[in-house]
Image (tube, rainbow over all chains, first blue to last red):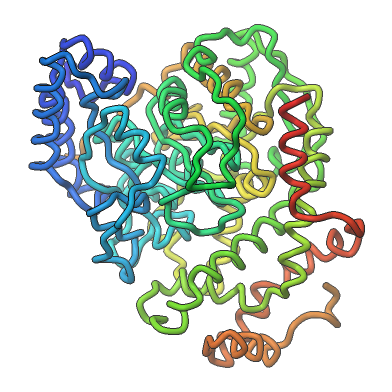
Length: 472
Length: 68
């Protein structure tokens, strides 16, 4: 790897370089494929690597550009995504045995919009089975390894997306976030991940886990890259009537705005309780950095977050089980033990509890917005702990499983229930070299504020720019 | 959900059977124990929900926030 390796550039920078003909799409794609070949044996981040097809598509992109025909702002940029975005004609495994050979007949709207902007497909990325797991374990395809320390988890469920973006194998990747699945791997792998507002990005053609909670969003190297991708994907979609008609702002312009005058809330309780020492230290350092950059910090009292987490859990497990009911009956042995265990849990949830969890959601959101009325965003750790090892978090369907999974996702589930946007930012490292992330939680549809805060933080720090070294 | 309302393994097994999913007694016992804290944790909220709260109020709250 040389310091001029194009694969090390940001998404925005490499897109500009290809558009300006300083780099060809083929050169960039070759650089990514070279890194993939070196890293994949260590990480297990890809489910499928489509080298020949990618190079052919890159050459075609170069030919088109030579003739003055650019498809869009990401013309010729190679990307790979979590293997749950339907891509017509491609196998989309959803990280499962059940769909190991399933071929999609349509293309997800979010993916299609990135294709329309000119992207080249590198392959598909690993994930938890059916996106139902926060650690990065997968009994069918094996665990994904954290590029910063191979013995540690990536977080999930967008495990391959986190690892591949961190190791600079792809410039960005789609993930999905139902209970923390973008923010967890962003946090543990040291990349920037944007969980979008419920309804901001179309879910059409994205494998469902929980239709009330599912959100589509990017994992990337910078907040600006997230802004670029969100601007391309966001907006109404006839194929997903739950997708909002709210106007799509210029997120990249927002990312260039300074922090001056921005009010950031820090919770007095819950998100600051029972933190690993490194997480507590990084939270304090992040507050100091944001203050230096012009933000003002305000302590906020949030409503009961544990109740939000319980409500999230009820909605998620019931909706997930509804999608999987037929396979739970017909193919129970084709699920991994932990996935089946979590699906089975829904069998004991009364219908009234599920409906009450949905009925409370608007009231809970209103209460949260009232409690945070005086601030533009709320800062909190993504997880109370740093990445555990793969071995110690390999709890399967043991009695330890639920407590371990609950602790990992303690700070993400309440945000999913409220449907709020949240940007996970690399914010520091442990002395042993593991990333620690913070999340900036916004108001509904105010992703612009989050990328503004994130980009300003990244102009003042270099955590996002650090790159893990290839294991010897 | 108070302890008196807590589902037994037999009840969980019956609920599973109604949707065609076969589970062992051991699994039913595990499920009852795994889900009880979540259900009981939410019960205090559930019992106090106003009569006319409905799921669509979530979108109303989202939209009100944007307009403000």
